[in-house]
Amino acid sequence: MLRLFDSVHGEVRDLRLRDPGRISMYVCGPTVYDLPHIGHGRQTLVWDVARRWFTFRGYDVRFVSNITDIDDNIINRATRDNTTEAAVAREFEDEWWSAMTAIGAAMPDDIPHATQYVAQMVDLIASFLDSGVAYPTSDGIYFDVSRVPDYGLLAGQPLESLRAGARVEANDEKRSPLDFALWKNAKPDEPSWPAPFGAGRPGWHTECVVMSLGLLGDDFDLHCGGFDLKFPHHENERAQAVAAGRPFARHWAHHGWVMVGNEKMSKSLGNFTSLTDLLEKTDARAYRLLVLRSHYRSPIEVTPATIADAERALERLDSLARRFDLPSLAGDMLEEGSHYAWEGEALDLYDRVATKLDDDLDTPLAVAQLFEALGAANAAADRGDETEARTLATAVNLLFAAMGLALDAGADDVDPASADLVSRRDAARSVKDWAEADRLRDELVALGWVVEDSADGTLIRRP
RNA sequence: GGCGGCGUGGCCGAGUGGUUAGGCAGGGGCCUGCAAAGCCCCGUACUCCGGUUCGAAUCCGGACGCCGCCUCCA
Image (cartoon, rainbow, N blue to C red; front, side, top):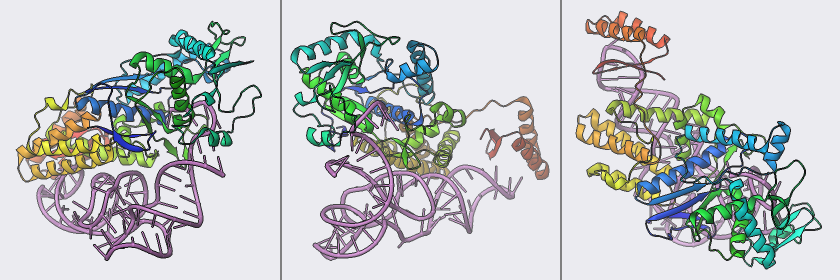
């Protein structure tokens, strides 16, 4: 049984699926008006790991994540860059997927775009106007939150206390500061779509309801996003579903954010590091490992120090891959774990790891188990127990792959000059000419190689 | 003001009342021609003050500090 923290109930609970054996999940995607930052990378990694693990456990997962391609930020960016909204959205969506692919995220099964769903949004808004849940003002159509009795469910507090704390500036025409825009009336030089209640563009909160219900259907299983989306975004999505009489997400899951110093990283604070920049100087797998080593609901600190720490830990994994010549997996989604022959030590390890991951995706404990098994594999090999060593090493490789982390035995291309140095060094060592062997090793190191001796002679690799 | 979260050894980071988290860094040893990789051993930490308990990092109360949401935000 899979268990996951549910934001509505504030506790870890069993994942009660709409259809046993199948999981429908929706992850709120980005508004594409700038480069993705490290926090977006974490989001993608967290839910990529969840999806991969669920799949590995034999569930048929349908994973939907949207692109918001029309919004105030995109309009502002287009104005600033003297280009069109469509061009901005296209540029940064491309940047998004190339960065997400670079960190090893599998593509969603569906990628709905807000602009493709405007007609459905218009229908929904029209129905809200009909039923009186929505009302027009001079600048658009607003949703009346007081019409949803349990508004505040996700925020964890009642409407009244939310209203008391509202920081939104006064708007005479809104009935409550918590009421939110479903539709923004067309303005000159801004994209707009026709609607019976007046041309304009959709508000942010409406697209995800329409797209998630449209693609996954009523009562879908899991709605995911950052903690900061819990309120008001997800609250407002839910409110619309309630008002429309549609059963919405059965479970809500929210991940923690990336911190910079003691502040949340965000575009609006301007303190973000783009994922693209990070990947230029870092092995993407190190970032995945860093993310896996903390719980998805905890904040993480991404600094040069924590990245370097993860890189060195990753090196330990790759050393295992080299020692046992393990294949690099996880380029694609792995097939079900049940398809592999788990026996003895490997089966024990699988059970231990699965117990952790099934229980609210406890990746840090799972990773700890795998590092212990890594040590056991090396120890077994050192004492000559090749069977146990290989069994464990293979299981470690497989289970990291199940979380999307590919170990890399690192067969770097060796240029002829370096290859020559290697063979000369082996020759020198065979006649115990240590001075020459050391000199040749220094030459290789100067060329940027890491040099290791093995039973098969000199091995070189890139650091 | 309301709601939620956090404070763990040099660093990162788990932790279901009692027995080793794990990683990185550091020290010692084994292995090695010397290294590297690997293995073995070593840290007795939990913001503070009370309380419950035979026993608390873990439960309860309080204090202090920090963060987040209540506005766009992954």
